[in-house]
Image 1 (cartoon, helix red, strand yellow):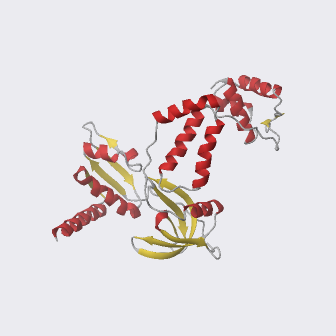
Image 2 (cartoon, rainbow, N blue to C red):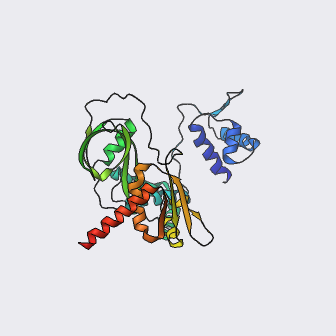
Image 3 (cartoon, rainbow, N blue to C red):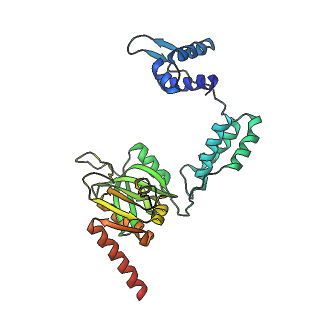
Length: 308
């Protein structure tokens, strides 16, 4: 990072709150003396940086001070354009109109002489994001409810049927092109994950339910859960390493095969059975016995289905 970029970054850092010279030096991996010279340079430019001595001291900006609009560097503009273009590949995204407007603004924030370079960069690199055609009409509403911690009354369609629930949305995420909402269900008295495209109706709840205890997050892996042990062939390792949840847990053997040992929440077994069926003979459940039985049962049901 050159000095001008560092001076700008220091200003942005100070806008977020007071910082000591040691904190700033550690952030930018330079000496405290260098930071002191940078602060002096900013003051000479007319930036009203205040300095306080003592244990609680540090550098700060006035509360009403704001930076003028900053031009983006070529690489910064490229990163923004990649991120926004990747969002555009999703079938549904929150705040669609704002996304398109921001993409147009990126062009104007870049110096004119660099815009052609940005187009050349954008043609040379891309991010492949899975695109799904499922409609998610309540995505923005769920996201806003998660931000405001607002209860909603919903109609939801799952594999078990259609249900009416009162939810407190906590977090919205996209995974493999599908949108999910982690929410606390008052009726189930548990935090669960819901597919956003399966909501049939979402409306503001008439009143906030009274809770007897704090809402807990979903814990997928914990030492108290049963240990799941999987054996993988070399081909199974190559296929499963792409899985965002199980791939990082693979322990490889010298021959290319491998295994997984994880203490998984039993409620995840339905998902794990589907993963194992997809792997076929390239994976084998060593433990627990109950999971082995569920895989065997699923295989027998598929065999009966095709025997009819």
